[in-house]
Image 1 (spheres, helix red, strand yellow):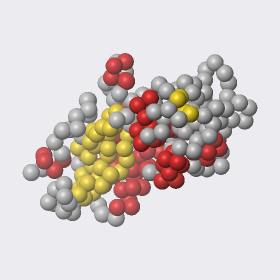
Image 2: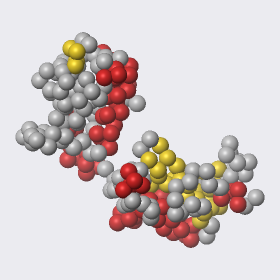
Image 3: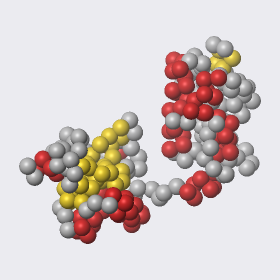
Image 4: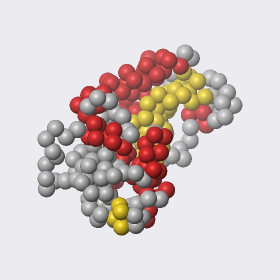
Amino acid sequence: MNTEAVGWLRSRDYGTVCPVCGYDLGVPAWDGPISSGRACPSCGITFGRDDTFGRGDSGASIICYLQWRAGWIDRHMPWHDMGAPAPAGWDPVVQLRHVRENFGASYSAWLASLPPPQTPEHMPYWRSRAAQRLAELGRPPVAIEALWDGDTTGWFVSLYAIIAHPSVQHPRYTEAGLINLRGPGGDIRIFNGDVPPWPEARMASEIGQSLAWEHTVPFYFHSQSEPDDQAPRWWDETE
């Protein structure tokens, strides 16, 4: 967590700056208990609607602003207002410095620093990342395993190397994370009928099988066709 950004939010000294993205709104988002009722054209939050439970100045509103900011950044900081173009030279990375977030020199530089999307056409990149992580472990794997997991954003697949070493998970084996793969679109894909098949599961299978073949060890993915975070582990099947 960026403690400087959190401290700035707690100060409640926002001036006319959007507490989410740093855009200059021209008026305060909140004036005491009274909200401006305006939507930020940059990140899209509407004050007095999206942060009403926090009345603009409580711990609840700080959590709201941080979560909204994280979601906006995850979407690559798009300009929200479709009815009006972004100002000339608008740079969301520069703008975020107003809320004590530092993502580098410029938006274009930040975009260039990002890894490619976790999509099948970029599989060589993610396979290389997993292989690099496996090499850094300094121990040969006894198996490569893919597991479903989930968070508030949705389902994803984690690829692990299983090492012959005791751990809290198992008396003889340790799991070492290689990469996490999350398909674009989140869980809304389920309701839209876009999955199955799950592209992240396909990628995990192909990358995992490749690494397992390279190291002459088994690859295990119990539930490739649908998410299941209660599936048995590789070491359960070897007991």
